[in-house]
Length: 270
Ligand SMILES: [Zn+2]
Image (tube, rainbow, N blue to C red; front, top):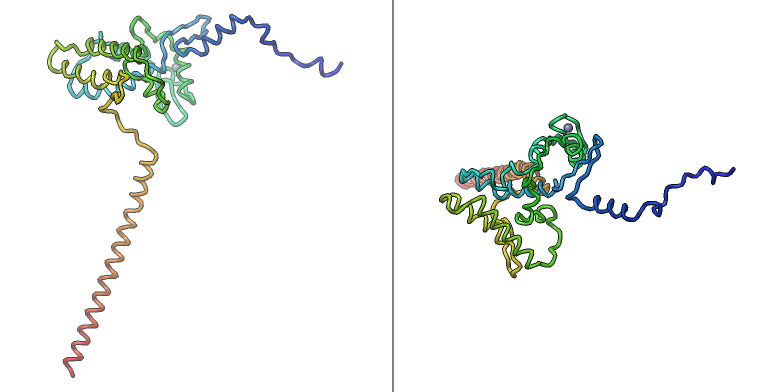
């Protein structure tokens, strides 16, 4: 018997039926469908956690500061309300410990990356997800320009006028339901602001506006930090050099003065 008899042969892909392979591929490729088999049950969530997270980030950065400034209370019927994000409770229980440590706020288990914590939430704390109708924040991504946040550097694909018009309509509907113009001055002002901030950019016209012209916290870049540290370190050195220079000038002036006064005394004596 040679070694040939002991070689473990992997099943050929030809043995797996093609429809099954296609189904597997659709499930793997579609981020909106997440299926887990924990506890023998299959959990299906037809809402992308990543896109919901991007939508929430946009709301937090480019809308909430203005709503807080106006002291306006968003109604729960408005889809932008945090209550309408099915992942909100889980996201609030994410604890960022360190560069490569994330902790589950429910059971204190640690993970190296955020994506593993996401999987853990899906598998272990699935019961906390309330995915009743209309609680998928990712559905608002068309109106809120989520791709600008998910892939900011990706080159823009050719503008589709029909898609832009549809997103603009959804955006305006959102403005109408969250900030009704007949609900007073503040609501009316925020309605106008929402249109400028999110809806105006849904256009294919040349020179069309960019989304979120106002707001957004500036991210602190490494370069900015390094420049600050360098300035803090170099500033005392600069003052020492200036001080030494001044001291040298003063002592030179004093010597010149002494020399001149000595010479004038000599002249007076003669
Ligand atoms: Zn946990």
